[in-house]
Amino acid sequence: MATKQPFNITPQLIGTTPTNSPQIISGDCVLRFDEVHQKTGLCRAHVHALAAQGRFPKPLKLVPGGRASGWLLSEINQWITDRIAERDSGPRAA
Image (cartoon, rainbow, N blue to C red):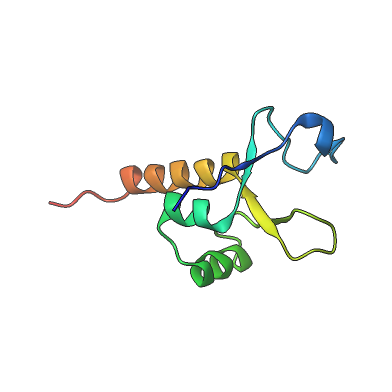
């Protein structure tokens, strides 16, 4: 089975964002759930539960009013980096 390529976002497609919104970095892309699962190992239900609790990046709608959604690669990578930092700063086993 062929791996799907992430959907690339260009700054021209994004437009301007409010100052309190995350800025899109040139070259960032949107991952669909299969890629998020591959990077995190988390199942769909757990990803959505964590996002609802504010403990995982929230998905964005790919089309206004549509069903398709995805996650920004940069936000998923930051979430993974934060998990590594939590692990490394936690109590050490004796």
